Length: 354
Image 1 (tube, rainbow, N blue to C red):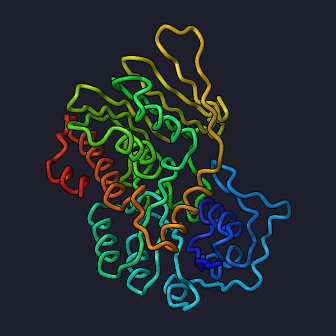
Image 2 (image 1 turned 30 degrees about the vertical axis):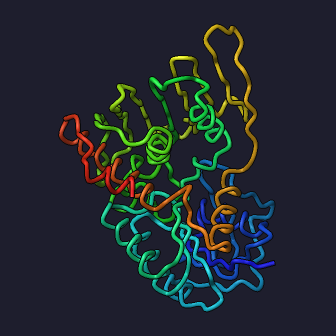
């Protein structure tokens, strides 16, 4: 059975989560890891992980015997045994490392957001085009079973014509990132680009591009936005309300939810519902339960691996689309800074549809 050999760049929360799933995949093999922290790259993973339990180890140590270890991304990229690079680094580094990897002949699976700025996304897409390598951004909600179930309900017309979408994603301030990079807006963009981008991406995956954006937000001291409420308007008069942010209280629980309302019914899910998506139909006094099971991270790495080994395009998560999510985040920021409703340009629509 053919296997795709991975090098994992960045061994924080997301890097470890992807490492664990790649190790279990029958058609993947982790052959190299890279991190600036010597303890991490030697398997000492007993520090705080983040807001999701993506990998657990009783001892805090992971055996990395037989896996090459590097302190610099250039050295991992130069490793001839690496076929594909999993990038789980600070956002500001995504474009540089992804482009270098593809120019060296490696396929790339990169954590969200795609990059810090739209121009950086364009650099990544040019590298993918000229190298002929596969580039995919790990926008996990596109593979999250509950969100997939909701999209099916909408696409199948079960709730009728969509009237509005409401999404929330809130948590405590992420103090766990190496060197505090998540709290530095110059590296992460703040919650608007690191956290809120999940829902931006799924909104445009579900409903397409809005025609207008109006947002309010809380700026950080380091050029980021740490809380945002955005209203998206669409040509058919439907709309979306999307909230995301970090709060300083460590006791604030991480939460995410989605509800889509149509002229025939509504479909919703929240973390407190476990894996049950609830479908509420007009005329019925009891919701239908739609079961949704599976691990989104396993599903997205499996999709990437199957596409690469099968020589297929990553149509479900095209770079053009995830570039659009970064562009929408910056349009939200422009609305926050100017206090105005921002129109979505025709050029963005052209890129989105390519």
